[in-house]
Length: 454
Ligand code: ADP
Image 1 (spheres, rainbow, N blue to C red):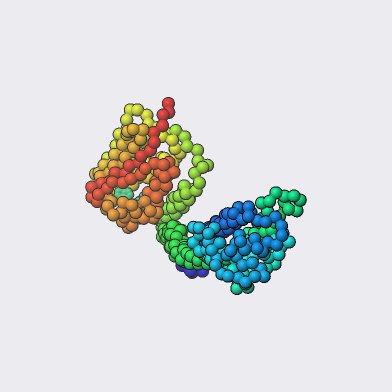
Image 2: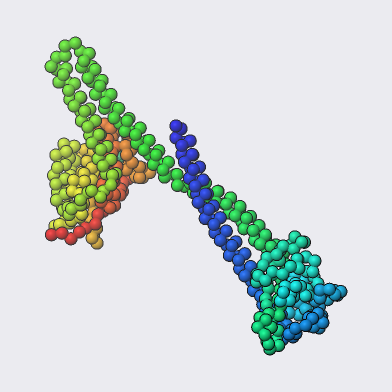
C-alpha cells in the first residue's frame, strides 16, 4: 500500500478520534452546565412564587370568616378579585401590592377555592386561560388554553377564628398562586441557543486543532519510518558492494579452467578481505540492533577508566606505528571509576581511537587523555588529522554517514563506528561531543559520571 496514503489515513483516523473524544467531553460539560443553569432558574422561580404565596397567605388568614357565604367577605377583603357569579371589574392591584420588586407583575395570577374545591374568586388576568377544576397538589405545571405553561403553588387557608370543631380547624379553603413560564421558557431557549451555537463553534475549532495535533503526533512516526527506510536502503547498499566483489572474484576463479596455485593465492586474500568486511558489517549491524533494545537486562559494573585507556593505548600502538603516527596517552595517578558495561565502554573508546588513527595522515599524532573534574570523568581523543567540516559535526553520528565516502570506504570503515559509539554513550548516560576544524585535527570527548570504588 502507498505509504503516504497509509500515514494520511492514520492521521485522519487520529483526528476523528480526537474530535470524538473532545466533542463528547465538550458535549457532556455543556449539557451539565445547561442542566445546572435551568435548574437554578427553576428553583429561583419556585422560591419567588412560594414567597408571594406566603405573604398573601399571612395577610389573608386573619381576615377570613369562620363560616357562612364568603362572597360578601371576599369582596371586602379582595376588592381586586373577581368573585364567581358576580360581575368582574378589572383592577388588578392586589398582586401588585404583594409583589413589590418583581419585574413583571402581570405574569402572576391568584385563585381562591373553598374547602370543597369550588372556585370562589380569581384574579381577572387569568380567568379564561385555566380550568376551574381544583387540584390540591402543591406544585403543578399547567397548560393554559392559550398554549402557555404555568407553574402553580397551592396552599391551605385556615380561618383565624378559634376552631370549635375539627373541620373548622382543618381548612377554610385554598389559595393558589401561579405564574406563566413564558419568560422562563424563553430564557431556557436562549440558553439552549447560546450553548448549541457555542458547541458548534468550539467543535469546529476542535476539528481544526485535532487535524493539527494528529499531524504533530504523526510527524515523529513518519520521520522514524523514513529513517528506518533509509537505514534499510543503506544497509542493503553496504552489503551489496562487498558481496558483489566477492561473487565476481569467485566467478573469475571458476572461469579459469585449471586454476594454478598462483592464481588461487592471488584471489584468496581478496575473497578473505571481502568476506571479513561483510562479517564486520553484519556484526556492527547486530551490535547496533542490540544497543537499541531495552537496556534493563544489562548489568553495569564499576569500570576503571585508567585501565581502559592504558589497555587501548597499548592495543593500538602497533597500528599507530604501522601508520607512522605518534600515539600517546595521559593518565592521572588517581584511579577513576565509572559504572558501565566494560566491553561496550572499550568499544566506545576504541572506535574513537581507530578513527583518530584512520583519519590522521602519516607523521601526525594522536593523544588519549583521561581527566576528572567535579565527579565527571573525561576521555579526550585528540588527533592532528584531516578534521571534520563544521556543518557535518551532527551528521557524522548518523548510521552509514561518511564525510568523504570514497576515502572512508577505502580505509575499510563501515560508516557505523560513530553511530555505535553514540548508542553506547547514550546507554551509559554519557555525553559525547566533537570539536573539529577541517585541516586542524579533531577532539572527541566522552563525559561520564565518576563513582567511588576501591
Ligand atoms: P567510518 O567507518 O567511515 O569511519 P564512522 O561512523 O566511524 O564511520 O565515522 C563517520 C565519519 O566521520 C567518517 O567517515 C569520517 O569522515 C568522519 N570522522 C570520524 N572520526 C574522524 C576523525 N577523527 N577525523 C576526521 N574525520 C573523522
